[in-house]
Each structure stands twice: as structure tokens, then as C-alpha cells.
Length: 155
Length: 127
Image (cartoon, rainbow over all chains, first blue to last red; front, top):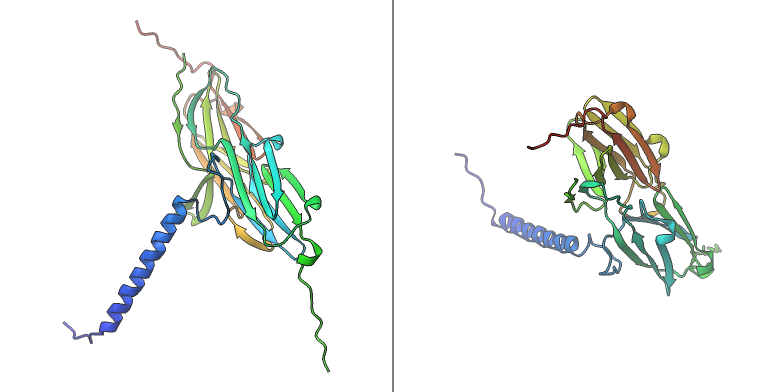
């Protein structure tokens, strides 16, 4: 058997990183239980939560929400002091008495997602479009919230 | 007389699957599967799918449904959706008439109707 130099500090370092990993795992488990680490507020009354993508450029925010099979009339979008809320209901298809359900994975019922926007938006210019089950909400920023270029004067 | 007998599976909007053979990651959409006297009806949640990319391939006993989305990736600050390759494979049994399978896409939901063979249905009476 070959002789290896014993480095006690190396062992300590690996315990330390193991502890850090454990902490990270526990944090992640908490995030999973309380909803995939969302940074928004959710209603406890929602039966399911739709997935979202948020994009931001100098002029606007763009929020996309996956709402397959939801009727346009069952979607409500509200903006209240910089908090954007998208809520509604996905209704089940009308069942005829003669249908036998084998497997239901798709979600039904009420849904809600809320987001706090960092910058103020022009509430009268908000545009919402619903196509192929994806809701796209465009929120233009007010002029003061847009980034400004500062001119550099060279002497 | 049909009885209500279903499996309510909590999958949310679907699951990501890694296909080890083809080294390809895809998203398995959530389904609702129903049956009535004439056919099976399968609804798949595939929001944002490009109509032109929806393909249903029939291979004897397997029905492979694929589609993909193309979301513009500019300036994304938070993403739960992303671009997806949808894929789901269904094993068909002898009840289904393969020549009359049809599908429609509306509002992000793909509805596939799989009619049963009209002469295959046998009812055996218990005396």
C-alpha cells in the first residue's frame, strides 16, 4: 500500500462543502414545497399555477403565461400599484354521461399568478393577446422609468 | 353501463423526459384520456405549439405525437416555459380503427379522436 500524505485541512474543507450542499438541498426542498421558488405572491385558492416567462427591455415588460384550453373570457388581468395579477378559471369539458375517464393529468380549476413590477407602467397602454393557449401581456414603462443615456463631456 | 374509473395524476402541465437512446430532451405534455362507446378521446396540453410542427406518426401499434414551440429568447429575465419539443407516445390496442384517427388543434389543446372498430366490439353476456 502506498503512503499518502495526510492533509487534515483538506478533510475539513470537504465536510464544509458537504454542509453547504446540505443547506442548499434543504433550501431547494423548501422552494419545491412552497411552489418552485416563485418570487411572487400566490393565492391559496388557486387550484393550479400556470408557467410564465418574463422578458424586459428598455421600453416594456412582456409577460407570457401558458393557459392551454382556457377561454379568453375566463381570464382576468389586473394592475394595482405595480402588482400585475393574472387570474381566472380553466373549465372542464362538458362530459356526456357516457364517457369513461381513464387518465386526467391536465389541470382544471382556478389559477392565479401575481408579479410586482420594479418600474411603473402606463396602465392605459397595456396590451394583452391570447393565441394558441399562450397569453402575452405587454406593459410599456413610463418615460421616467426608461433608462437614459448620460452624455459624457470631454474637455 | 360504463362506470367512472379514472386515474387523477398530478403532473401539472407535463414532464421533461430525457431520451437516453437518442440523447434528446423533450417535454411530455399532460393529457386527459376519455372513452365512450364509439371512440377514445385524448386531449394534450401543448400551448404555444406551431401548427406546422404538429405531427402525428402512426406506426402499427404506436402513435407518436410531436410538436415544438419557438419563443423569442430576447431579454428574458425569468423563464419557466422556454422552448419546448413536445412528444408523447401512445400504445394503441386492437379496438382502434387506425384509418379514422383524426386530430384538431384549438387554443393550445390538441384533441385526438381514435374511433373504435365497429365490428370489434364484443359484448359477452354472463349467464
